[in-house]
Length: 473
Image (cartoon, rainbow, N blue to C red):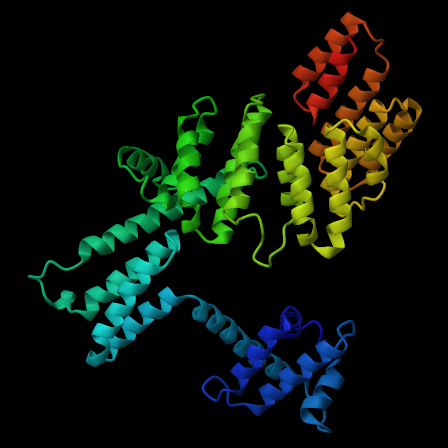
């Protein structure tokens, strides 16, 4: 039974959703089979009482059918029927969340069944919803297009050729949906090109970009945000598009869902990282400003009210890069308890170690990093680099050399490190080893070291190496 899709699916549900699914099964409109209800209750109770144990076929069959002999064909059909009605329930749950679709379906039903007394009510309800809904994203324009199309048929424009109709509104909303979705998925493909060799095919994308350039869409953020992101990324030396992008996002980000807003902010941060990687350190302020804006507008937290470790670390790093130490410490204090409890202690210890490192309080870094559990490879690698530089600053060179040797072994053995990342980290610790051999005041060796680091291009945290080299002059 454990391998069945229905058991796997029900194990994913929280108690509230399971409760609603049971109510769904009780309703004769959706289900008239008492056996399906009994099957669900058996699975649900077993999962609740014995979450670590596996549900056997024999136990399940006996609970549902009593002493009747187990029949594989009947068991498979029961599981299939329960899965089918569960999928119907999931679709219904989503339908209940989407008021725009409900209203559009109401207009369609009123039209198809010719319920004339409800025409004006359906129209007023539709107008009210699309005027008051807070979002102006791609889905808004899609539902508004469908609404205008349903209105076109409901009032009989399709039968009255001499009426002006709402054809322009239909096509406008359709165009805005098309443009916003096309540009959104094009930006999505740009991000994926870093990891894939696949060449995406986008019909009309150049024509769309040329059209949006000619027509002013700044009042339609679902179009303009993605357009300006594409333009900004196409030429990192021209910052005009990026400045417009920042302004439009700041003024309009609340017109998007939390998920969409996070994607938009991620795109902006990726652009800033690209600028930083090209050596433009002035973008550190932009990096910090975006995280402050995310906090102010309520987009730092996930839907469950928690903050992810990555966002927690990156926001702190953004502040540290411009030496906003008070803000960083306040941030850790304010949001630390909103991390996943299982990751909380390690994430906070690692982040506090970062703060102390940037404040040059190196003696406080080592004990904090000793408390960190490397729950993901990125944290493990960055923590090891941080520890290496803390040892250097404390002049514990023998310990540092041992740490470097252990780090090399770690890099060679871990299978979850990509080859590119492995080489980049290996180069960093190799350069750090070279730095240990340079005598203070050896200008020739220092210049050669700095030149090598700057020209290599495949080293992480080059600033840490370069600052140490300059101090040896």
